[in-house]
Image 1 (cartoon, helix red, strand yellow):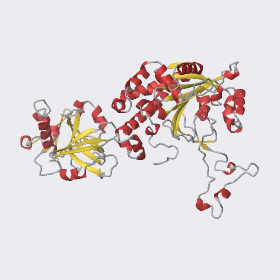
Image 2 (cartoon, helix red, strand yellow):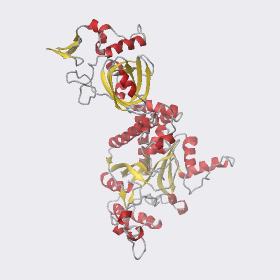
Image 3 (cartoon, helix red, strand yellow):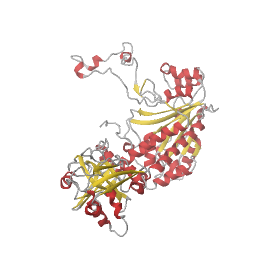
Image 4 (cartoon, helix red, strand yellow):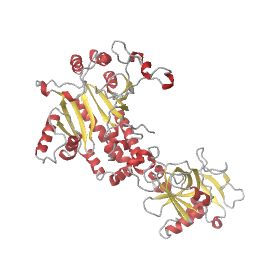
Length: 578
């Protein structure tokens, strides 16, 4: 059965197509093909391949642009912005730029597509205009070619500028230039949102520090856009890894009454502070309830009936589910009120925290190594363009560093052995070259120590385990050494080049009496942890877990130096903008 369609929505058009359906094969026939010079790009093949070497790139573009004047190829899907009449043929869906570029070229050539995005660069060359359009799905975007014969060409040029948003309907054609195998020959361009000359991201390089001041716009840059794609891919990899390992995902509370780390650097959550307009003639101080005996704020009158904080870790809550369901993990935001302005710390950050029942410290080391390798492997497979960008502009040698992560097993060394290594090298250095903080047994490793071990001595990621008990948290299992001054706990840190500590974990203390004794020694109130101690009272089992700082993982994979550049809206002392 044959049916006629007006291809450009104009009944008086001399180009009419007929859709013939025969043996399951659809073909478009045309009348007046010679007279109209095969005006639709999809029909150009009737006259041979215009992109063969016997045509110059310029002539190919000229011929294609003449054909582009017919707008019959616009998509009329429900999501399409390019259709103008209900009679136009619906050919292809809206496509993301990465999908176009990832699809084999032979499958895309001559396809009609609709793409949407933001103009990165724009060049007007009289008869032609060139747009680099980016929709965020890849680094390089795609080149769009506008010919002066398209509708409203002059008006469109006046609206086009770096930063404006547009919709393009056109055809995928072979690109005669270098860089990309295909480009889009535009049949129609619609400017959705203009960008005046005050747009902050003009075509020049901007410092990362400046971009932090416009965090709402910085995702449109190459570096931050690439970070966002890598971050998303890493998050997806984390969930896939644990799912494949049989872990359950647990959502732990953000508001808590427990200090997991025992450090006290927590953000308090309270409703006791009245708004100024609510105080009336009383001072704010008079409005806050105070316990008469202690003279301290009476938090029993607060919203939760006790002191409450933003969590520094989901570990304690995750342990409760691990001691019932086996292997679990939590992945969520955590908070620390540490007045630190370094490139390594944030007040709000994300943690990956698995907990494993019936597991030892060495089990979690195996798991952490497998997780890091899984994430790195996935990103290297699916985000080659972004990683090549980071390797070229952010951290030279990034790709070789990541390849080593996959090719070599992670090193392992006890804390005592690590201190011996550090003391030995420090003793051979001149005073000027020595570590800023002298390494000694009983002191925590500083960043300079961690990076020396990972970057110089082992030249790969390294686990340091069995730390002194005095520098670790109360919940870590004591190793029970005879020499109490040298007592250690079953704890580990994973140190990686360029970052230092990436992972911190331990075997949890599962013996009730030992845990209670440690808490009293540290001056922790036992009563708020009654539920945590119940895990040791009823069916206690050896169990272990770790925390992986997600932002540091993103730093490690991208080579970004400042942690504030790997999270969309960084929170740090003095800054809660956006």
